[in-house]
Image (cartoon, rainbow, N blue to C red; front, top):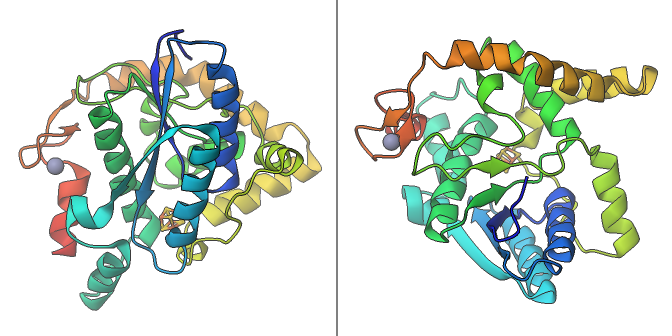
Length: 266
Ligand code: SF4
Ligand code: ZN
């Protein structure tokens, strides 16, 4: 996933997965003097939740001697996430769960921050659990071609898109938590107040139930998609990548999903 001289941006939310990833990468990086790490935290603006996570992320970076960059929804998109949800609900325009908006906006914020930091790669702490949940979610949404793009190492498809890598894609979430406990790493345990509404929770329950009864099931699902991905990629190739007519960021549509959402939020 890495080259010896990569400048790696790590997305650090402050949760157990991302702080564990930061510590693991910092440990590996010490052996590669030409590699560089920079941590990026997105402040969505979720009161009573993100403030604590930001402190924990900053604390871990300081301890490891890693530069820490914070970007906020408010400065990038004009509103905090709490304000966006309020506006959407006020308009009765909340068909999507808050996480559906947050996910799209955060992905964009991370890409912009990683690009600004001149990173060669953007590492995120998605675990085996996240990956298999996303596979199910893509099927639930009828968006199967998305699986072609959301792979553990993305291609360099556009100069404005920093390639994303997921070093923990085969690591179960329980193990990242165990790592943090064993190493005495501080992380945020409190869940996001909007998390309960997400369809992802149903996917998690299904997968955890299956794994409990049939150990190894998550890994099998992950590997199955890895095997059929080349065929999906062939199908997805027909969707070209251009630049958004409004913000200039890469997108397959004329107007990117972030700009579509911003219009909706108003
Ligand atoms: Fe955003 Fe949902 Fe994650 Fe909360 S749980 S930070 S709303 S994606
Ligand atoms: Zn746009």
